[in-house]
Image 1: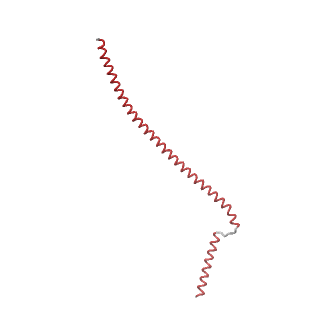
Image 2: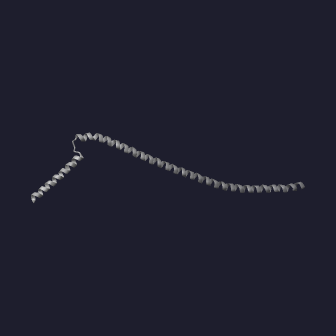
Image 3: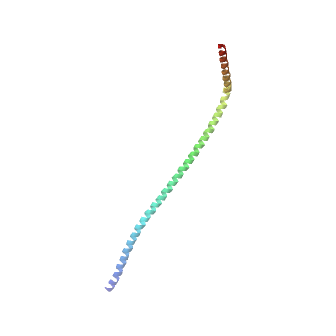
Length: 130
């Protein structure tokens, strides 16, 4: 029995050590879970920040590309309009010349002569009345 009582306290100490080890292991595991959840949260924040920055850069890139495309379209439209106007002018000028229509200069000259004649008639009418 002496051997049994001598080994029993050692077994009790080993069991106590195992219980302490188990308790400490559970505490450690709990602490690791908490830290892991904090790290996951930080990683998720970093991932969200990264996604937001990528979305902003994509939006800015799309906006710049859109502005560039609009400017390009406006430039093309102006060029096409200029070409159309030039072709229309080339096509219409011969037709207008054949119609023998007066030019703006000729109309202005006639208007000046008419106003001059009107003044002369008015002066003559005033002179006869007097």
